[in-house]
Image (cartoon, rainbow, N blue to C red):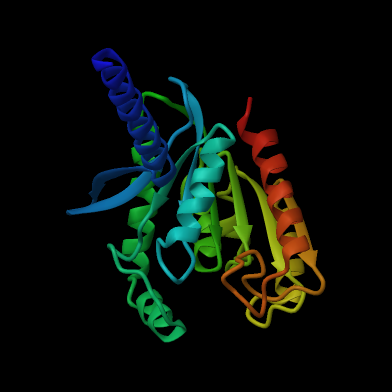
Length: 253
């Protein structure tokens, strides 16, 4: 009887440890690194095994590094990528649109670009990351910053822009070596189809690799189910499939 109780206790501890391990993996590992004179924090999600893995910088919407963005990073890790979810807001997360706008406006552009560069360098410094197979993905504000990573990091391999701001300056686009996937809503009033077509034409004129998909009936932030009025489930599913196919083609080499 005593032996049975001991085995039962050991089994219970094993189950608790297993669930704790799974919970930790799902929530990522907290990491920190230098960005200029500041120390910034992020969460690193890694696949099982030793690697080395292709890696992705995961950039949040104007809400901040919330649970939905962490979930996307975790899903990317499930696909075999080391995913670094960085925090441009230094720990703050918006709960209202007004607060989100305030936080977004409060991020100095030079600091954001410095943080993006620091995230890229952090991934390159990891022994389990393939240095030449690093990509970036972002949504909304983060989609624009995903493009910025491609503009400032010539060795970036791939970028996914989900309804983020665009650039058309030929001198700037010339610096891009990453393949680009852009996913946009046809009803988006901030980044219009005309803006997207202009960006696509400029990229092709510069001889860059680009794929564009505009979802005719979708507006801004159509991939996030927390956007109750604007979420488009079918389009979001298709966008995610395209994202995974694109990343596999460009990062799994």
